[in-house]
Amino acid sequence: MGKIKKIGVLTSGGDAPGMNAAIRAVTRTAIYNGLEVVGIRHGYQGMINANFKPLYAHSVSDTIQRGGTILKTARCEAFRTPQGRKIAYDNLRAAGIDGVVVIGGDGSFKGASLFNEEHNIPFVGVPGTIDNDIYGTDYTIGYDTALNTVVEAVDKIRDTASALNRMFFVEVMGAEAGHIALFSGIASGAEAIIMPEIKGEARDISKMIETGNKRKKSSNIIIVAEGDEEGGAIALAERLKPQLKGYEVRVAILGHLQRGGSPSALDRVNASRLGNAAVEALLDGQQSVMVGLQNNEIVLVPFKKAVKQHKGLNQHLVDIIDILNV
Ligand code: F6P
Image (cartoon, rainbow, N blue to C red; front, side):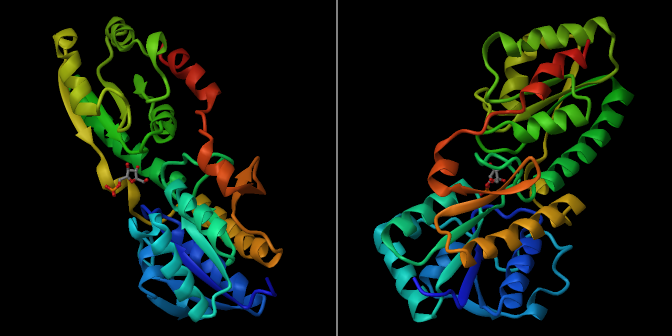
């Protein structure tokens, strides 16, 4: 590969607050280094449809504070096929794009990894998903904002729960992982946190309820990760009904409001760092890697590793759930 002259940038999969800050950092770092930048709209689908538009420094003005993604996003079935990826390659070549930054989650990196096995345009990834479920990075763009949104919502639910002595089952997003549930549960003082990663004795829900009962708590908040084997907050509340005779129970599903809103300062700053690092990585001749943050330092992680391995929960936080609820 010769020197990179023109890069493409796209957002892929579920949107996450802070993606615009990453697009901005990619665009401006590229321009700073004398490169041309092309925005690829609607994720990989836009690569297949050649939905490209040039990006200039001013194209990303006034975007750092906006949620969603100015490039739009999509979950693209066609890019899962070799034929789809070949069309994408031909379109990139025709547009003179010789490096790509993909901002997205593990599904997006799986596609990028396959593309780089088949074609010689380097892809570098930036982790962007509210779920924070990508191996090899402590942090993904959007996670912090989503957490703050959940905590604000649960604080409000707590007010009404206390007023009426109610038990609330609050369902949060996170796909197959419990990171949002764990962090938001700790931050909102939840009485119990139900996550897919914690099984068996470690999640004796009856015991948690019993503790609350003994303490005569005026409210009980149970955070339920959507990906838990119980099948979500409604199913769990229904299953526990016989044990909850003394409680008035309500369920709240926070849903997609967790994905929207203006990004937090942390998401804006980290997205700026990661977007910058992705372009630097391309200029250094890297490909098929994700830029991540480990112990607050930028690291490069091969896509293959990032998508194969499972990122565990923060064990210290798991250990203190019960302690904080004695
Ligand atoms: O990956 C982000 C996420 O918001 C998950 O937490 C959730 O399971 C999923 O996307 C929802 O996807 P969709 O917006 O396609 O319903």
